[in-house]
Length: 537
Image 1 (cartoon, rainbow, N blue to C red):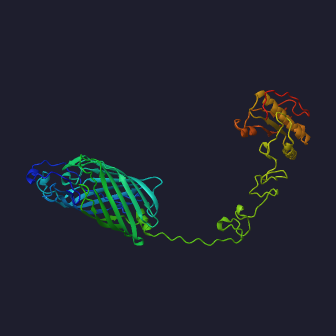
Image 2 (image 1 turned 90 degrees about the horizontal axis):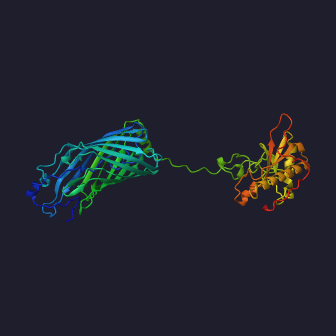
Image 3 (image 1 turned 180 degrees about the vertical axis):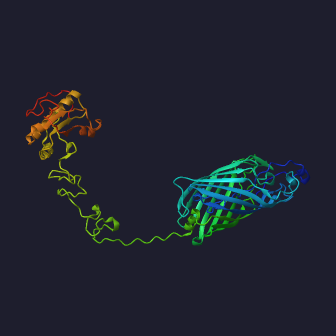
């Protein structure tokens, strides 16, 4: 047998036999659980909470046709509508906090419902008509980084929580008889045109029930909704949604319960603070609690001039068209256009933001390319910097001082560098004394490297004296391999560690202190035997 809509199979033993059966544990058949914020999509929640301290309140009316119908297995008795129709009022109120949180309350009231005699499930008479439903508390918290304003566009996300209290009449299929709760997640996207797409998912913790051989318990609620502006300036939109829940509990050979329905409607955001929504739809016929038809209408009120009212009024305003960009303006003809030209009336290169190049030190290297814009590079300089220049307590050189392998003989290629060092010293008479430091890489022993670094530093001192620097302004000291600049495991690192540095000594009020090492300023070369095991460098 194939049911025409939601059906269950039970063994039809005759009305007389069914009348003596024990009643099953009943449950809440209502799957229409509306949301109380005006921009929520009826039963599908959107991510944005109400604005801070803004309040929304009003009624939701819903009418379901055949929300609970049994179909006998042999089909002889026809459908039995246990709940043939139901008119329900959801009195709702919601408040926003800090633009991040939203809390609300929903008090369901069954205004009228009817159905056939319940003797087929063990109870004489029809269902009670006017009863309370389960009181429901709702909450929503926006996800940081995904909180979208009412008139904004882009992605949004929020986490939700619904808690229902057992205030409803379980015997009238209006309550679950126990506390239930349902955490959830909301993901949505609002387009610049105002179109909203929203996706809901979560978990619904319900008591386990067995009704007429069908298991009803924990479920996975879902919802997919959309809102499309029709007359955005007037606040008229269309809404549509598919919502339901997937049952997690089932008996052997029992089809899984998936109560679901499709709803569509119209909405009007009026400027008075009232939001009107009405529509309807149909159930899928694939569960114990899917109605054949559903209709709904709501009137939600937001006090005028509140932040939420202002937000909805801004949402109704269509986005202003983006004006076309102005034509490029380039009065000086240097191909630097508009605000990017810092000198719009003077020709200048693109690399200097449309302004003429300057050369403060007059070394023919423009300042934007000059690494030493206040010091002329000279004929031997590079990138606007001289081969040697004073910087802090150092005389910095652009090229290393090179020596013959394993010797203290300075190679001729390094003469220009040392001549520039001598020039800097002679131009800076206030520099009392320079310490020439010799450093090596880590190859060979400590003693060998220390001696080699001392001899090389002394050779540099002799060269500077011969270049016109007073001997009393020079000292030398060898450090061997004790102060590396880089890792000695690579050739590049060792090349950096083999170096000569020029450190400016602090001035002395009295007589100059002696140099760190003896005999380094004498104009003679000290012969040192080579270590037979020293590697070539």
